[in-house]
Length: 485
Ligand code: FRU
Image (cartoon, rainbow, N blue to C red; front, side, top):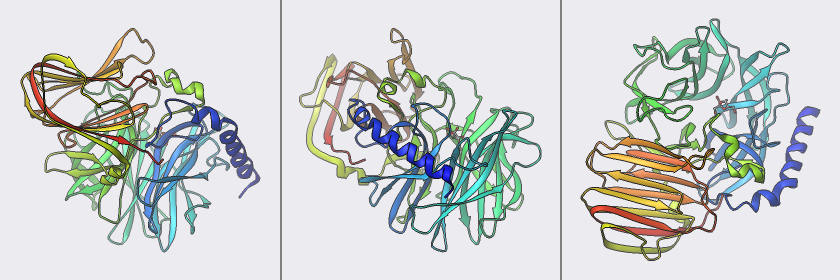
């Protein structure tokens, strides 16, 4: 390890130590979501189950609640519920990653854990250069950097990052997010026999590829995998304009479903589908665990979206991840639900069956507070139904047109309300809601639609109110939760 590496690690550890009480005293600190020990957290990286443990790395700026020269922080768990912060996996110490060890992935090969990440550099002229780099470990905690293994191919720009590696039969493949010299976002594919020598195969999808037309200037964090025989490209394109209910966050995340050809590498795919409808969701990554499940974590944030108006910056930290979610293909679309292991967090339970509300707003005895989990099953719903949480955020459904709406005070201008909407293609049957101190994840009808958002209500406000226009009859189950992150 270089002297610079050692020094950066010491500085980061002392930053954690200096601000520990400030961060842990923040009423908005999360209980069952990953957050940074100090500073800024963004993308989940290097997800893998390795030698019986789940490893979760993340983009981390320890020195300020803002973006900058990223480290890879590291969490480990045996069960996806109880997590230990393992400290620093990678620090931006070398010429090829001096301005950030950016996002990437992990694979296991011959008992060795390989991390693929992007070395980010701003050169003397201030131009961005990005390299795909490798670091290896035999104990899963200490990583030895091996330097760049891929340089930007001809025709592409310095925006060239976020390698995701996987194995198919006897070969290794990698997808990388890129911007070409015409400012078109692309996903590039590589192949390798040994994880160190990589051959460039070409773009498999992107703006102006495969009949897509203009679709953003940069595609970040690609992830390519199979779900029940369908090939899925998960990606975060930048540069899409709002289009009615779609694309209202600064940047989007979604997927293309189709078929990946390896002979002439290209993805034949259908339309882009946003994976989440809430205010904060970006740069997710997936991995497959030993039960064969495709599990995803996302970043509960969006780049350049009102970051400095989050109140937690006053307590020296910002952002968190989503809970781990299982992804499945139901023949038509991806559905998402929290990994069942999270049920271990459930404490006191409360069940009310057959609650009827008619043209009224009501509280329900005992349904309150945070962190909690709610499960609502609708028996009858005439017209409109809404839940208002902590006098801050509300979620509503209008049966007539199927509209689901999430609204909250605008983060910058609190006199305004901001909305995110989508249309549910079937009637509302079920809501499954995970509520932490400052976040909400709403799974609609078994995860056909999901709304993920941060929320910053008055910390002591515990009220949850239910409103119905016409008559709504439902059962509701609530668990108080204990988080172990
Ligand atoms: C996505 C992203 C990645 C990049 C990382 C840097 O949020 O911009 O493209 O690798 O964050 O932190």
